[in-house]
Image (cartoon, rainbow, N blue to C red):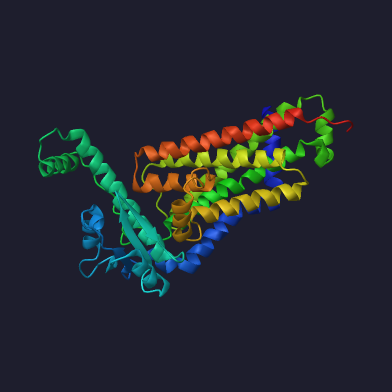
Length: 383
């Protein structure tokens, strides 16, 4: 088994086209991101983002009003707020390109409507998400700490004092402190993870007799086919994981993308991403009918669609997808990996990270299980 694994690793690394698309291409794409939008990544000065807010009773009584009042105050304001009476009035400003988005508070949540994807829309999305996270955290703490009849303001002050004494701080996610291309680079790493499925898909294609002479030789070899498949899966995972770690290191130290201070958990997210990519490659190879080029085309198409929905081309589309079809990105491996890195940086220790990794693991196991069942049922009349 060890010799087979080493042989498969050498086989993968000798395939120049495979190495380029899975290891070199994501780095080159990162270089293009850096070259085209490098000014956005280094500047500390941002023009305020124009936003329309529906001035309803719910908005005036919500924490969002307090947050937007603070964010729009002073010379270093992050947003300029235009109050509108109705959603239709805000939509009119949006269509005329006077604002980047329209915010409406309904119940305890705020919805964002955008017309296009871009940096302003991404910033608004991040701001609303950060406000919601902070409101949820404080609300949960107050619910746990406040007894009936106690003064809510006194409880809130006690909670903040306790957090300050423990050294707890909230990471500033405002544009003045964040990398405006961070979400795009997180999505880039996630896309590379699924591109890594080409490794496992290629080795599994080699083991299928109907796809070439190598598969026919494996089919009549004394070594069991399951051993070839297992060694191929292990070899492809090793190569893909090492490639992902290399990409993360390049993004961190060459492109200046911060993944947070917990490198251990960063590697855990990368390992889960490598497993997701491996399982997708195995599934496409086993379940999609056609030749090797057809299977690679399907894998690339699925990966690029997932990256697009996850926000690699801007947060506006991601926000619209989450608002209209929230389940889509709950089962989109690219979005789950992206969210894992995002949570690690902005909300370390959050249960959301483990939820994303758990869903990734389930998806990976289902894909691998379905693929193995399909391969076991394959029968050939002749070699």
